[in-house]
Image (tube, rainbow, N blue to C red; front, side, top):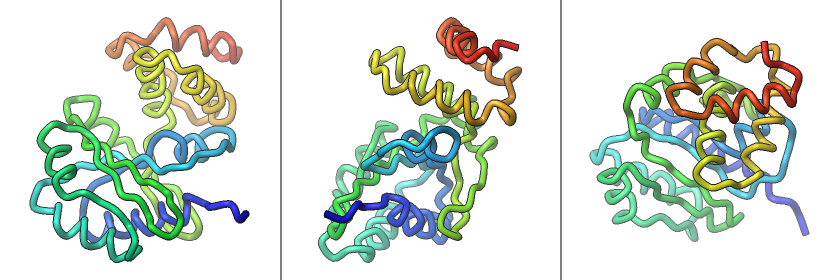
Length: 193
């Protein structure tokens, strides 16, 4: 059985979002691949900042990728109203793209302002910064107690340590009430400076 590379769907979706001028940042598993150690991920997670006026054009553009694809327009509208999630499933590969509507606020705005552009398969793609990925993962860990989030943070701290803005990381961890978790992981990584 041939392995499916979710990056192939990612670059197509990123092009659509760029063409439609919908601000986005890639987060979670694919972002861990960029900032940390490679690990299996079966889906693509993207935070979007979009208006209801873009729903139909985005839906149509995504469906043009795969005649057997799936996206629910009502779920898109609901996600925009509630700052929730909607998804697209590619009919050829089965890869799922989760679109998370940004909740805005100071931290949401910072994530978009601090985005990093990385080249994936010769396409420029907007990614969450390594610091903001760490912070998100710590918040998710606190909510879910899933050790996967801590493993991902450990990986990002180890691989991307030289480029991480620790001052920003600690200052924002205080605001998010995850400083204890961060300090514990920094200590484990021997990088508490």
